[in-house]
Amino acid sequence: MHDAAGRGLTAMVKKVLTWGSIAFLIFFVAYRPQSAAEVFKSIGGGIMDIATGFGDFFSSLVA
Image (cartoon, rainbow, N blue to C red; front, side):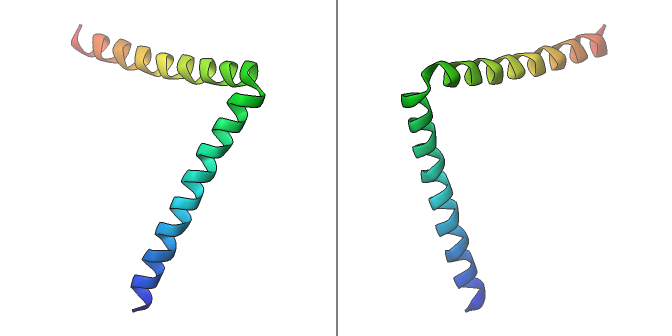
């Protein structure tokens, strides 16, 4: 019984954090669009760097 209550609480916390994150994202984009754009550019650049690193690794592995 205690285990089921713990899972219910975990699901509720996850739901609250998810909706809170979405609300913060909307607020951030609405009130600080320039800053939000810079954050997303940085994240995109980081993802591209990671992808390039993996590509270089596999190219070196095959060559």
